[in-house]
Image (cartoon, rainbow, N blue to C red; front, side, top):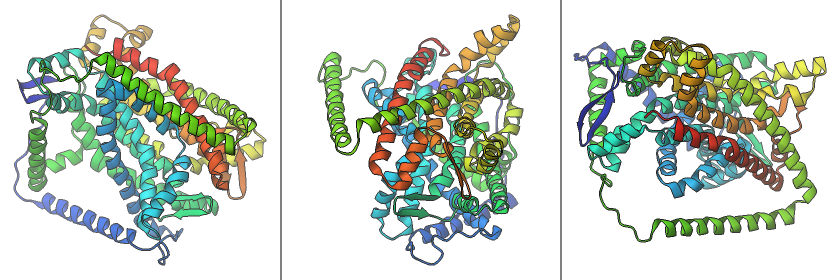
Length: 585
């Protein structure tokens, strides 16, 4: 049960009806184990940091060995890259997404930019960023590491930002009124109300981001852009090398290693985070609650980590309670009227758009033909048809499953590592199956390569639906049971409206991810056999390999155009409808 606790200025938070009391213990073996683990992590991070300062030409700096003995070290390096990218994604989420949600004028430009960024294929970023980061640290591994981390960041940040944006736009009006009644400043309201309200969805999307990073790690750790080749030791480059050599044994060993790593960070990090985020469910009756995970119970038995977490929590509470920002009713200083400000802002946007459009026109006229542009737009129609078809099929499959899991915390916890593993499974590991089947049965590449596009992105829908169902108020479910609402009426009147904002976030990010994945899905290789589907993804992939910057740029602009148009016609109206009609108030 969620109840407001200690309603006073600076004291606005939510807790579960059950308590998780801190267990006072003396220094014990669990503390010793925790110290050893932290020392091991410090040694691993120090070792990786030492390698990043080495020159690229150093022996073994970019060599990939297919022996299983190298996999543990490769796993550590890949995992550290992914967590570095995750930290950057959290910083991006708590700045960019919050700004877009809080400022109407900024949101008018920041949200479309986010739509564009999530749709740009990963090789589109690589084409323009590899050389940039390599030039920052010429001849050093650190430049290549930053390029890889940035690419992983692009596969993690967008859905986390959309989750935060959706949560901030759908905070229940009655909770906003309570925060105003107690005179909370804008800073206090953000940390006491809005962040806790957004936390369940953000935690699930953070898990999805880690899985998305695994999905794209193959393309990021081993990539060729024209004459520039970047290969860094890691599981992604290990898989890419194994696929190129048709070494099925090495591929299986890499899959097993991935599974072990995913299970480890699921048990050690994400299960405790999910249990902690369940404290912030918005409900007034006791809902289904799973027992605390073993790792959380173990941490409570350590004196060292208990005290450290308590001090850290007290520090965050103090920071969140600082009286920063405007309080409700405080007069604001306005230099110009709102209407004049809107006109000025619109004029600036139009001017920037006109300058950008003119530069694009000059570049296109000098490097591209009208026939080429028309051909690329037609390829975009083909890819868009595949994206829409796959999103519809994935929604029909995963929405019912996600609701079922979200309403059953015990089963959701059991399914959590399985879903993370499936979401992180790199698409090119399915290439042998698809290539052999298509060649053997003489199937159409344009049809049967399409499922590769949704393999990694369908999980955005499942994770967000689980988060929405898990956050659904238990008192509303109790009302539905009391009025004997069941069957299709229960879905149409109760559950689908309740999870709709979460579904829109998941479907939007899945759509953008599918466009992104088209770069991998429309060109499938296994050894010397390569199959190509007609579409925008294969066009960009071929232009990237050829090092044709103008054609890569044309493909990216065309993809951005399709994504913006589709988002404006479909996803954005759905967002506005959910925030206007389907918020809990």
